[in-house]
Image (cartoon, rainbow, N blue to C red):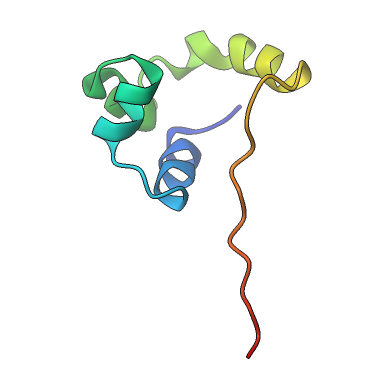
Length: 68
């Protein structure tokens, strides 16, 4: 199961605030905050498994370090 902490870290990795991401997802920033704090995540567990299985997501891009 994906944890709220993992969701929060992924959001920060792409440089979005809760408000920005919530607006993109068309949900309230309060709902996003609750998810990031592991509230109601169990309801979404099967849904997230389905999304991942069907590859209906955009992976978070890894930052690539450039050696100089």
